[in-house]
Amino acid sequence: MTQTETLAHEPRTFEQLIAAGERIEPRDAMPDAYRATLIRQIAQHAHSEIIGMQPEGDWLTRAPSLRRKAVLLAKVQDEAGHGLYLYCAAETLGADRADLTANLIEGRQKYSSIFNYPTLSYADVGVIGWLVDGAAICNQVPLCRSSYGPYGRAMIRVCKEESFHQRQGYELLVTMMAGTREQQEMVQDAVNRWWWPALMMFGPPDTDSPNTAQSMAWGIKRHTNDELRQRFVDMSVPQAHALGVTLPDPDLCWDERRGSHDFGQPDWSELARVIKGDGPCNAERLARRRAAHENGAWVREAATAFAARQRQAVVA
Ligand code: BYC
Image (cartoon, rainbow, N blue to C red; front, side):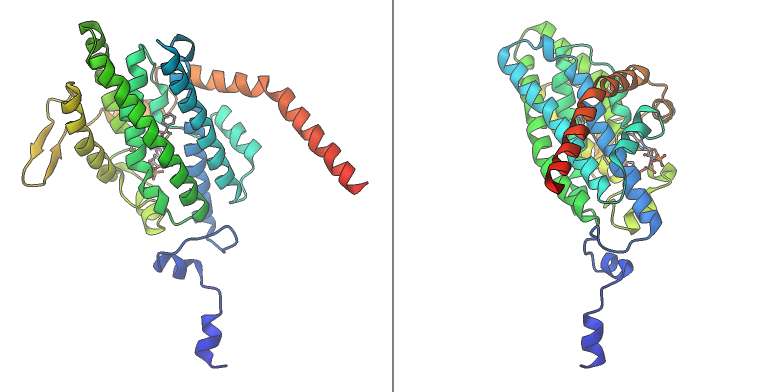
């Protein structure tokens, strides 16, 4: 066997796989910092999906028709499923699911700022679908090509469902905009309240984002926060126009030279406050998650006892 043939069979290093644009799988060696960054991002993402059930879940008992209730129920259940795919992806990195939950409810790990704002009317359900799921799609479609295999594969399934979520939101808003003046005003009011928080979902500006450069070098993130924010604005402006609503930004205008929209900056101090736990609903969201965890203790105990009994039966 020649030396070249021997080398061809040697497993490639982490750096070689990343340089070749190939996926890292759980069995592959990886730097501790890569593993830690992925656990941080995937855990935050999973927590966001689970906490993200609350703002819309609040409207399940008040949906205006059986059809709207069935659609909303399906969407909220999908978010639970997304959380589960993502917790599983984190487990492939050696994270313990119970630890991740403890980190969330004890405030050691973050979740998306967007879910710390209240839902004040049924128009909010439509606007969350349109803008929040729209922002999530912009952010998550590139994550389907993330360098870590289990994360990228989970994202493919999540994105398919997010696209249904966005359409149901937009369809609800189209219906309301064809309704009474009061309904149209409810939609505009919801857009005014959610537009800036939706822009903040993409994270701080690139100049203030400590993690982006390394995450891009490792192929975890494929675009910077500002690139994705720009993509979202360019996508949303014609949709707002078609809907007949105004986006609450006096600086929003088409820049012929760049072939993109110029837009104003969100209040970055507000994002910092909400991330630190001082948003309108942070305390309420975490309290509800903590209560759900405590109320579910008997289910976990029963499942653990059942699994132990099954193992005993196999041994016997
Ligand atoms: N909120 O260096 P940066 C959904 C943190 S759920 C809170 O730019 P990175 C849905 C950031 O974690 C969608 N924290 O960080 C569900 C970092 O803190 P640490 C959720 C934020 O990671 C239900 C620090 O600020 N999507 O769609 O490179 C119903 C510095 O930031 C936020 C995801 O989780 C924020 N907005 O980039 C409906 C997507 N922004 O950890 C819909 C996956 C930043 O250093 N995650 N921080 O202490 C990502 O793409 C990236 O983690 C981010 C941040 C773009 C969010």
